[in-house]
Image (cartoon, rainbow, N blue to C red; front, top):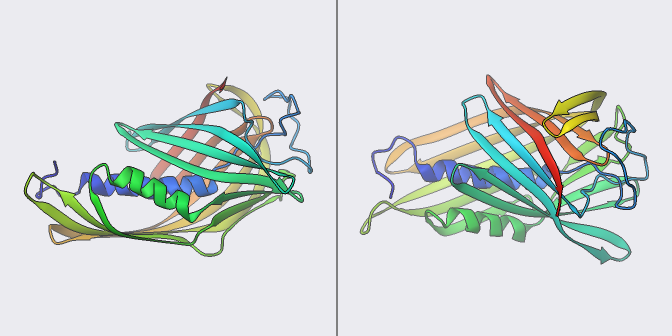
Length: 278
């Protein structure tokens, strides 16, 4: 159980993790050629214009996430299924994130049409992720989510100058929580968060080496802004705003190879560790 005198609550970090996992789900993607193309990870060919940035349905992608504060976590991404919608293949994608003993699972959908790949996070997926993770340590009295469906749209060319665009409305969450601290007592708390993504582009193509191998990649760059606020009668108010710069490397037939997110002196690096068959 939580201690009233803790300067920062465990639930605050876990709620932040749940929120940012929604952000990851909203904008995470893998850059692969179609299932009929047997493309080797290191063939060096940029994605063709008529190919979508979609994960292969028979692959599992394992990542390691390392932060400058020493925190380490992992992510496992895979396709749960592919459904036909008016002749368009719609991918159901699952991303499981683990930080210590905390697990966060998010789901989103993706499809490719007209030279563009679209990833979508729907309201019900956001609600499910929040309840699944927050209710492990507290009771949600009320929840408000805005900015759904959250979309990310990419030009399938993947060459220098190709665009990555996001929903213009920011993704927002407001939670009213009741947190048990012992068998007979609880603490009320409010948590607010907002994330706004800024459009970006492919800036270069270069070779990247990770534990999974060496890959010829497209490098995308974009930014996002965050606002977090935590209030409770039991602790001082926490409030902060940050801007993150994202460098993202993708390879055809593989997907995300590496990401580096930077804000101030803090850096978070995600690297592909291995690719296995489901």
